[in-house]
Image (tube, rainbow, N blue to C red; front, side):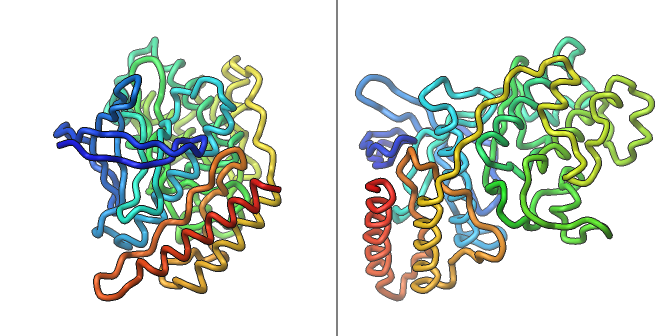
Amino acid sequence: MSIRLSYRDVHGAKVDAKAVELDAAEPPLRPPLEAGRLDLELPDRTVAVRRVRPVDRGPGGLVAGYRQLDAEILAGLRLARLCDGGPYPRAVTRLVGYDADAAEPFALLEPLRGVEVGSLAGTLPTEQRRRFQIRLLRAVRLLSAAGVAHRGIGPRTVRWDGDDVQITDFSQAALIGSPRTVTGAMPWQAPEQRPDTPPGWDRGDVGPNDDVWAAGRLIFHIVTGDDLDDTAKLAARPELEALLAGVIERPERRPDAQTLLRRLGEADPPPRPLAADPAFTRGRAEFFAQRRRKHPQTAQDTGREQPPSAPAAATAPPAPPAERSRRDGSWLLWAGVAALIVVAVLLVFGR
């Protein structure tokens, strides 16, 4: 079936395109998000994309879905800005476009590649093991440079095509420096992300090494087929013991991804981290304050998790819209919010 789509690309440009909804099955996402396949018919080419959008089922329903979609969009924008017009790295799912304020908000992402790496645990060909480790750690290093922690790295969110990884599902992503919250799934869930943090562990703020715990455990699992639930298991695999030393430690004691790459002899120069933009951060904070006053049932709790700030080089997506009520005229409220967003963007980018 053909439909019309209006969205913004990662540079903030408005795009109007015809799209064809395909019947091709997509791997299910964690509710309350779902994905479907589209062919975008652009003036010069046809592009295959996945359309991800919230659904009213699963934990938190639409409200949680809007927040997770926002995280997916904002992580994609920061990664696009990090590339600064250069080739987009294959190791992370590329954001193609988004509309966070439509009646049915969505994100357009590149198609999935390869297979879930968990299906290869213990069976990955020997000649691919080192390549997998290098590609995964470079991807984690890339996220850190973009100021993003994925917080859900595991056998279902990392894919492998025989040559490169593809980290997918940024719905749990958070900005480095924001308060840590409970997220992820055992055993890939680092202790600082668990509901019952061990004695002596401080939940604290999201840090650049938060994804190293999960990445290290995933490397061990894919190579051996076993779970690294006891560091004594490393003694039987000296090459992994040398690589993963310190990974199962508190965040401040963990080696970063660059250190692990150095242990593999692959310590090429890391990407230059994104510079902070205090003016944009202030503008975004003011917008969320307005949203909390006008629509408290879906407002972010600023004492806990906030989605990563959108990059100053791209048009900031509006906050996810509130659940549309069928019983009142809430669309008027959101029209006012949309106007507020336009003013905020003009203030930020017109400075």
